[in-house]
Picture 1 (cartoon, rainbow, N blue to C red):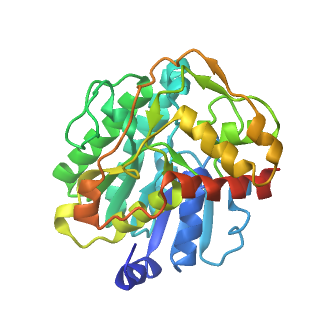
Picture 2 (tube, rainbow, N blue to C red):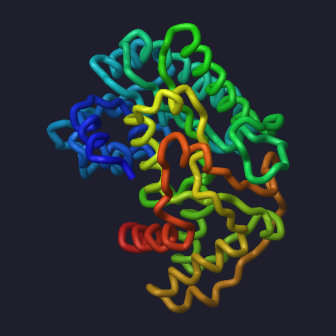
Length: 333
């Protein structure tokens, strides 16, 4: 985890979190405030929720700017006096991008470029951004290694790859230090279980809690490197504070380095939910067709992050699911 000197760096900094009302962004905002940072949150709440910020709205070191990263002036306002940027704002979801590629591109590419320009002009020390494991595309090699990617399989994947290319160019052209974090199937507290593009874990948890049968896409053998939110928070904090010059202007897998298939996932969810409601253990799971754009398997190598950033993931899948289930049960039941 982060050292005392890294905590001191955070406590003396003003940090902008874009998409701060979202699942990952709101968790980052809370952690940064706990570490005594001054935090600015920029969000238009198209996918995030104001309720995610209720616990910190009145914090003396928290500022909320309700606005859109597609507006350059809004981005510049949010960057005023900021030391570091954690750029989480994006339109996620492969299916969403297939249904509406134009809006995904406007937010994920044009909005990203606006934030780079605003960060450059504000003279921020570092621009850390949410990249995506979807960038690996049709590459079948496991585990996924940062320097070896395939062809993108969705408009969303293209937008996230373009982010990496732009970040690299902004470092080479303008000297802006950047770090990209390729997130692998992040889950945990505050992840929205509702909506057409809800992630699989919160969606299945809510269905089990309502005694409904979750539908697995395909036969359930597709596997993912499911990564608990606290591991992702650790990676963001390390990326802000690392003094290792070789660690900056890099891309990192942000994962746990293990994979779980969907059948195993539902079994683990039933195990943990059964601690609160024993009848959930008997709920059957159904199967549907595979989703277009889905890759069969995903597994990250985290060696680069371990070596250059000192990353040590503290939450494996089973412990992370136990924590997530506890949060859902007590907050959404």
